[in-house]
Length: 343
Image (cartoon, rainbow, N blue to C red; front, side, top):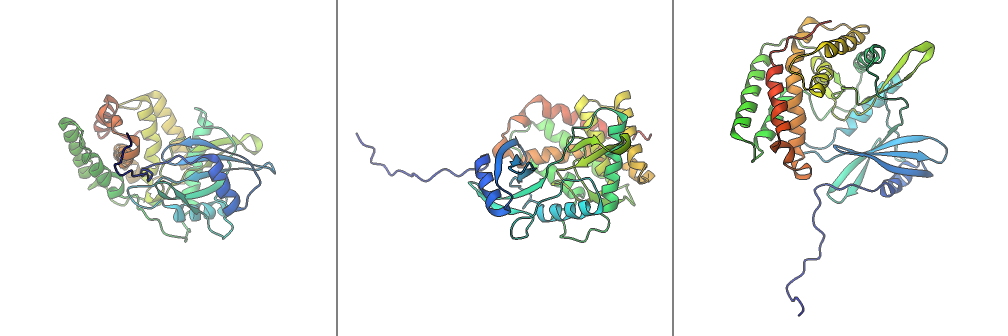
């Protein structure tokens, strides 16, 4: 018997789609004129979707399809203009390629809505080795980026990496999750209140154009002249004007979180020393900035989990229900009392 009920044949609305490499290839050849393209392959799907692109003339580049964000539009105009400024000034960064119309990004009509597509330089090298020279060079290049960005005069950032952006709004996103246990909610709220109290004691913190995600995974090291090492940076999409102490804290946070440590062990202290000394070989760091670093270590994790919460409709609730989420915030609670290891 035929079903005579009305049939809604319109496609379901997507909250997040993974666009195939062949589709991205068409956009690149049409809007950037960089072809002919031999291969365009999805390299990584996550907060953004990354594609590795090989051209017939032997060149390579990376295409990034930006994620749609709850906080608003991606910060592409600021990011790409800052990267062009830094590359021209001599920083080792993945600069954007220019589209046919002179723009540094194009809009792609994905099923869930429009998303920004940017093409970047392909950086050679490998992730930083767990060795003093690589870690120190990463810190030194971050300092150069901060210095060279001081005279940036391009499009303004859509976001300021202030306490609202890093702590208050992420906390609100986390508390809006309906399935959080009562004791977890209380831990989040009490920890954030304690961090707010510590924030109030900070004065005269240095402001820089932050990379925003300098944990080692967004840096590639290669051999330079006379046995030197070159640290090249990419993935500036979480950057913006903010606190130097925050940009430095991300590396310490990553070391502590990766080892699930409440306090730095000998290895973390050594790595932190190499990183900070590398930075200070180029630019000094004030005592007041140092004193704020451990508070920003704790704040950093609020920001990250807030980013996960903002993507709940495509990443799911599971991460917030498991022991991993609770255990990590128990570490955050302890990190508040850390004494910053000053090399």
